[in-house]
Image (cartoon, rainbow, N blue to C red; front, side):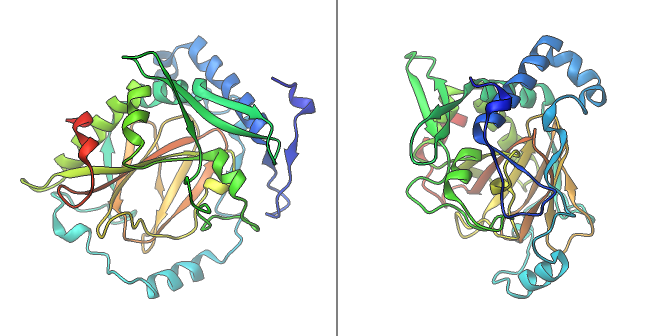
Length: 316
């Protein structure tokens, strides 16, 4: 691993106050923070997260609501005006109304599972030198039953990337290093390689179905991992269109401050360790303030029987 002083810092076309980290340097810093947390123990960190808020080099934001490339209010008005499907809060099947201020429903999760998963995923990060851009980030896990390595690459495989991000010029290589998307073909192997991810996926679906009326169940469609050290994981207003009606859950796995914003909401929905945001994925939403140290996960669901989810038996 190279010394930080010799690592490359990539300047972007975003505001001058924001400097992008190279993937190489970001992985190095993330691993250093993970080692510190493991030495302090997860239990101690969770007892007093405030004491660890300012630790580390990655506490500065990769993007804040003041670092705007577009007028947020105009962007939101334009998005709502062009919205093809009215926000029906998933057809009224929730047993609880969304929070009036944020238009999300909070889900309580096990904070220890979230933080332990972030440490496992950080341990699994590898920066591989070479290639057209100098190197790439990948995740390397192990399938418990066979002991075989499972290597996962970032981005949306076979696509040109997802361009609705807050950057001056989109770069697929940068996004491939900070966003990992798992569809129905590869999320089962991801959950096998990372048992705590499987445990969290089970817990999230249980919490989601607790908020739905009796007889309504969901199937998992996709899982996304979003590292906050790069603005290519910071999304503009968009909708989740994996299926005709998508239900989305986002959760913070790491330390650090972050938030999201649902169009039409009075205020952002903050992320907290152990609390996820559940919302109708077809209501336009965007990323909010994000510290570089953060790792978030999104789970995308459809109503049972409305998607190709034969591998969902892993979560039953």
